[in-house]
Image (tube, rainbow, N blue to C red; front, side):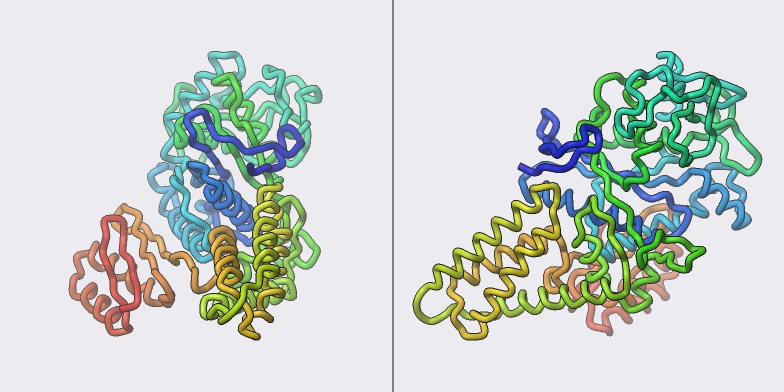
Length: 489
């Protein structure tokens, strides 16, 4: 039984699946106006850990993470870049670069691919339908071509964040996608068209969806139910985004929109809020370029309890790198070790099995990753001397291997057990993924993607040259319907 703290009830609760046995898990994904910063990836690493634990416990998890590809910041950045995005079909000219980068960054951190990554721009028809239903049910109203949710119309508003409709001033409305004031105001569902903004036709005139509206439609459409089992995001999304998401969904469909809500705490850098003005704003790529191992970054992001603030420092990253190397060295030693020739170290084997049970118990107790890692390192400290003295029995070694396998299935930090790296790009209107199996350099992956681009452009001579370069470096490319797989020859 896995228990997670529920933001809605403010208490730890068991995570349960839907009556059909599927556990519907939705995560608010990136807003792709730029490269993802490392604070974003704290949330996505924590949700990856949660997913892996639930799958390891036997749940049939259906995992969906959206892509927000239309929103205030995206439009502003696209305009600043000189792009005319009044035609929504032009938005990908700006957003796909950052979507591909996000998926590649997730692969770098070994974050498992979602079962689906719905894009907001592909669900506008469903958003218009939801807005119409809210108007019909008396929860929304039109004003000058925009449509607003009337907060006072829903008695349960504020149940997630505690920010209730009592403080709402009559006629007080907010049109921006994000707002910080903790007072409930009527929020925009559909925005009337403005100069320089993408425009879709609607019953209320040309316009575009509001940010809060998008997840209400994508989540239920992709997961096939108006009720989700688990919904996650950073703590900054509790209000207004998730509060408004609940209001839209329950106002339109009734019932419970989501049974269980989980949120991660902020990441701080050198004890301060991450900010470009402070010079401490880092993308994942910045940290990798500074020489930090992606596995160390993942380890650090996962090592502190998800509801506790995490302080990112160079010292913390260096310590994480040493911890990862220590675990990898232990893994290599356990795999290579031969059982002691005589006798059984029942006491040590019992101890390893005890710590293995503690590893599981900590993860089942609100994803206490620090406790789980503590149990694992206890095994490292106790088994290493036995291996050095050739006193580790077959039972001890097997129990240690099983624990390492459980660890890597969740934390994914063992180099020899690494999951596939990948590069995802949009080629000829389709998503193409090059996947590396084993220790394949990034430059080889890039050559495989370049080969696909050349083939799409019918430049077969260039494609053949790139194929030969990949083969000459000792790697084999296997073309599949969904992309290419690369491995050592």
